[in-house]
Length: 250
Image (cartoon, rainbow, N blue to C red; front, side):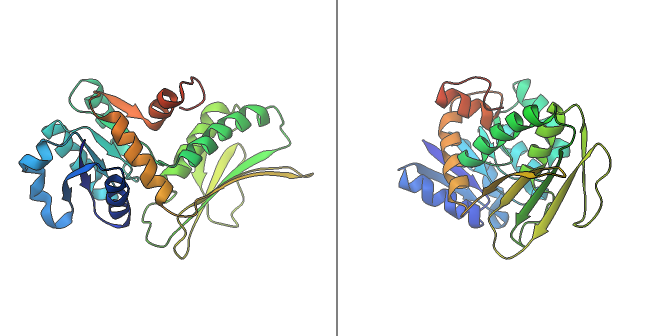
């Protein structure tokens, strides 16, 4: 399989390392200094691309993949406003994309638990939820794409909390609104915590990424799965297929 890498920062370099360890061919690596390589023969002949870039470069990279008919796995976050239009294009046959806010297998299991926990806790009105995410100081967008996904999962299922809002630490939550908090510190790869709080006790679920390797491995596995497919996909489609399960991953 010929793999193109779009974005060659820390995640791009780690993806390259994982891909080479699996003996995949790197057809080209495109970064800010060689954008013109989107027009190269090497890029057009790629079986699939993986994109981890700055948020403001996400849509441009996706459109370049669509134009070259190269399926693309996208892990860039912070461009959600454009996602519905991109999804429509893919579903009309104008390109192929697999998007996820987080490619960690462990995080996607955590997301499945988040949905399950919300269904249980929704009937206990004495408990109120909150969500916190902590990332490294280089991460520009907030809340993180993963936090947004977790928040949207919870509000889609809950009958008591139908929307979320970003809050500063110490701010009082609004009635019936899920508060989402963020911190940027050090080189933290990513910590996401969902808390259900009552006067009597707290139920706390946390996913603590030790490093970025899990994200890279998941993205490369998703790319291997996506090659040859057409349309719009999520990591839930990939995980449901490889685990032969239904209704667990979304």
